[in-house]
Length: 450
Image (tube, rainbow, N blue to C red):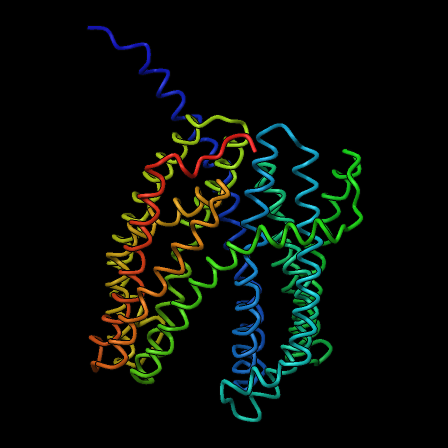
């Protein structure tokens, strides 16, 4: 009995798709790993200055990372728009869209800087810090605010480059910026004795260096294509309008995170400490899945722009397999690590027990999270942000009663935190998986060639 000639053809197509995914996902993973090194470097150096300075850094970083997180639409929307135009063979249009996004990022970053300079103190006071911690947080926040235009421009520029199917340049820039931040921090904090101010200045300088490299490459490419670099208000408004659904989608995610933190605070100091540690672990585990989602954005946009739905389906199927399989592997590793990680994080036995309970919820969540992350990336790449925004808002609202119930019930010990993570993480991922899975089973999200 001879094999069908379609079998080797299908196998070859699958290998091609796998290579495309890995070509984008592996460098993206490296870039994602490099990004948290900025805060890690700052924390490591400032920990040697004083505990008060470290607390101030943590408080200011909460405000800064919230702003940057809400502005992630600059990267996601740009990747999708640029990839679609690039896939359709309209390279000039693709780069022009990315240039407009970079200008929008600089404008939003500038407004964010003004906001923090004016309202930074009341924002920080709302957390209820001691006067000493507030003083250190204000120093870091006000200086770091001048790096926001660079941070947001890096997001938009990275989206442009990834949309052009290049994930290597963002990796080089992210790693280079993280490495540059280390000697700058050492020099400014200890060499010039600037303390927490030196940490902020060093990070800001590194961020502007990163955006200078990215924008330099983009400017050269734009000039080669004869593209105007002058900002057009109408174009900025159009880019901003197109990005609104992605902002709404991200806002829905933040609402769930904030609600969970509020409930964890109500459960008690031990549960809150364990909750924050569990979020740290979850964030770290998400990096690999995020890299697959980024590959999904770039490839989906490219092949839809090229009016190639068959390859889009092939990419989607492979990403689903990789996402669920990768999540399952992470689950097994996390189950074993759940007996080691708590002791590494804290000597407090009560916190260890609560953290372990949250980690066990994460163990059963990871395969679902892998499925959610990759389909989220595919639909972003398809420009299906309006659906993601609507579904995200509905799911966030649906999750809140469960969080409120846990807060009202307030069960003591690890049970309380486990219930909170079941309500705000496991159930959240299940509902997102259902909404995304139902969407990709149709063809409504596949708009070809535009």
